[in-house]
Image (cartoon, rainbow, N blue to C red; front, side):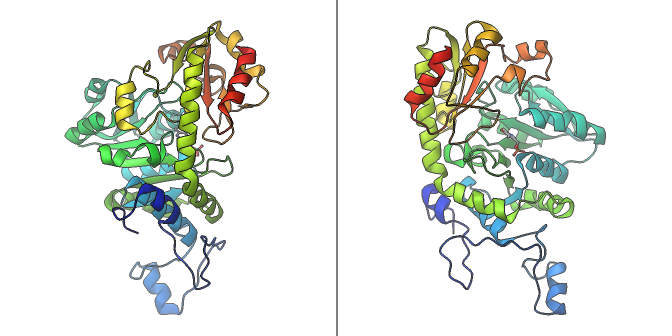
Length: 389
Ligand SMILES: *Cc1c(COP(=O)(O)O)cnc(C)c1O
């Protein structure tokens, strides 16, 4: 299904579907670890790559391939490599494209496990990472070394929804001969298409909005055929492969992604506007609000502000915990991208292991609360928060 022929909504429902001789209307789920060959000669041809086809589910599975094609169509990517989780997508990307002695420039505002992976594991193997501001393009340029191979960012960031200028940072990367990878988990291709803005690689935690209903873990790496070849090579060898069952769940998730992202965004905007009116709320962080410092950039780069809202309550940790503990409807959990609204206190959960000084420098105050806005009626979410506010 060619990318240019159909709109995003159509691709989300139809792209990548392959029908078997049983003429199923939905996508078939192939729960098999291996595949058989007509004869010894065909097996030989398949193994040396002379003939395309499935061999073993660590390498490929038709259900997973359908998911890869559908997501690739949505991101406008030549190729997608599906992985067992978002973290294994980042691992596979870097294992495929980097070697000892290479250097990464990354946004300081990255998902915690990504920072952990870079600092505690890649460093052991001689890959160093420098951290720079998510928003100051000059810092990216200044951090470049002769051995810099990869720029890595997430936008909007978690939990403060800072916006990185993908096109501007991509231009710096290109000039320096580095690749730019964008973790597009918060926006999904429905709201933001980093490859169109000049990024080389898109990373997903499909666990979040792509599933959208909190069921399974998965991830993806997308980019040109040339860049994805070594990434797929690592996956096929090391095995952080997406299961066929999970791929089937994600295929169904993609079909409703547009509707859900629109609804998450509309609810989040309404909630953010309401929070700004509350006397005990000191500040609201939401890219869709004109008060957001990068509102203009966000509206140029993304279709909407997305589904994540952060806000600071007056009174520090005690006040923030009071809001959280007085909810009856919202789920107290660090997960996000679900139909059910979730509420988190970053300073004591997702960002608890960072030193208080570093946390303060990052703007993650004790009064900060993050909401991943779900699909409930906004008035019910408001009433649930109003009790503690
Ligand atoms: C959750 C998340 C990840 C990691 O994904 P998993 O599927 O949990 O491994 C990476 N990046 C971002 C932005 C995330 O929110």
